[in-house]
Length: 245
Image (cartoon, rainbow, N blue to C red; front, side, top):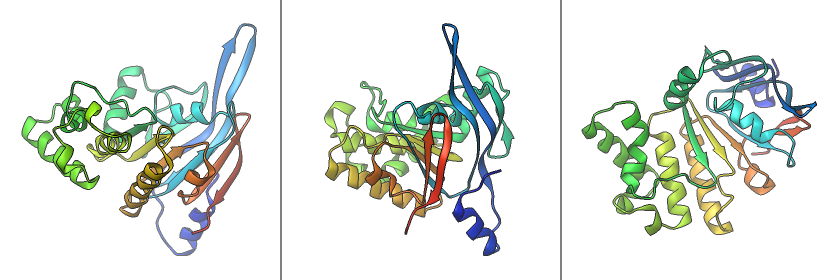
């Protein structure tokens, strides 16, 4: 399998690698009329525990389809996908839903918060789906809100929060079930430059704490925060480089 440059550096240091993402010849083909569109075309890729990876590329390059496959929101036409050691490429919809809730934390450009719920209640949602008791849900949600600096906003609803605060709530929600993988889709796309910098500083802190992060972005300045950049073109990986520290 293809490895990022940082992976080989860790091998040289004698550091044991624990793959979170293992793609082997992953393909996703869509049929449009009498044509086949190869949105992802034979991607082989490994992301190891604790890496921070940016996926970049022009519109139509396949990066969004790749993100959907990584997040088990879509299934590949061909190839194999192991997530945190588990083969997931052949699972049915119910099993994939369980994998998403247990293993993946999602952060979206549009925040995807429920407007009638408070910040705390939004953060608690993944635990509610997992049937965690209310006392533990509240305790863990409050801990996550402290982590993202929103203790004093826990009882506010989304319309009472700024864009940056709403994204922090979304980040807290993504972390609440201690996922193996954090997937961020254009996480600063709806934010101004100052707020974007604050959110990326939070991402850097999460990475420093050992979280595995894969982020799709079109913004080179945002992508530079990652330790590794994968560039997509025509459904294939055309570049995989380690960023300068």
